[in-house]
Image (cartoon, rainbow, N blue to C red; front, side, top):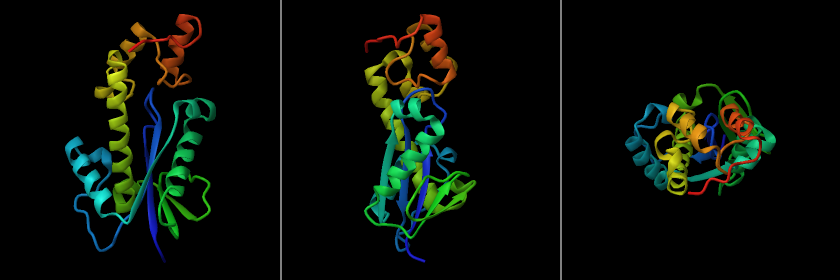
Length: 198
């Protein structure tokens, strides 16, 4: 059948930061033990597997859709765009692409959506791990820039701590303006993005 790539994303739900997608073509001769849906793994397990995937996979690609793209396209279309970029970034062209979920990006190769694929198909599990670790590390960098929001802890999700920080500080340039808790800060503050200094 040829090479098969697994594709998954991380970061559809958070209020801040890009959405990240990864595509992975595994090497059948180099088994990676412990691959699973990234959400079922501890941060340490994910980081160890991340290194193994980069080392042992035939090829990998990680791509993003920016906050500006999320705001202009909507989160679903931005996610599909990140997935398309990830597949197109692969060094080897797959014969087939297996995508976690029930929606497919526009691709020039055969593709199949697999609901729950991140838990059942190793290439998708590997992609979910790459996307999650990459995005978590991005959030740790955002934390250094804007420590008042606590990005390193909640990774941009709408936790009580994050919502309180939004209430106190307003939004920063990394927040998704049209996600309702962020949009609410603009209506309270009369419009424009608050220029929050690090």
